[in-house]
Length: 243
Image 1 (tube, rainbow, N blue to C red):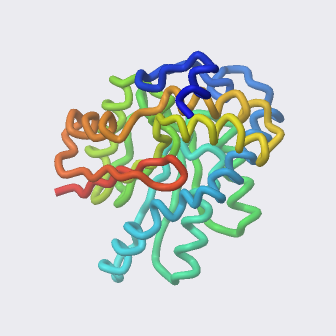
Image 2 (cartoon, rainbow, N blue to C red; image 1 turned 60 degrees about the vertical axis):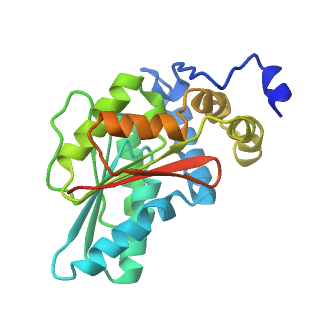
């Protein structure tokens, strides 16, 4: 497998951060929307919302007299937030699930998804590095986002999440690995025709962190006691409970 990866000129023992097409200003709106739809399908098959739900559900069960507020940071097309809201409705738990993203196209797409799904998610534009973070959320989560950032910016975002949350921080992201690279390069082509996803997927894995790197960044961000574990498919999950 490593020899196959080497044919693409990659050294996955080192992080390689490259600009991704979806992050480019002036990206065609229709191409962007197609990519957001495709990522929603990938997220569903990867069961990303299940990465967040158990901790959120338990927090709500432990505090039945109050509404639990959840913020999905860099929410993209809003599919994770919408599925969490649907899970809360099925479980008859009092929750507010909101999402934020830098891209106005993504925010509008997420609003339309929530409307079609008949859930009351709120989505708003937000720059994680420049805007002041809201401090009225019990859970602040993010999925498939940290790998877009430089090492220092990733630590900064973790610090901001830790400072802003009332109770829990949850991070789900790609693992930089040979298996993950091959999944992104080949399996994604079976799931979508989006050229953006085809191009960005392998670059995302090459720019991702390892579990040890994420654990070290959490410590640098002051998130003592954070747990980092591997999850399917070639993902990792960080959870930190505020003291």
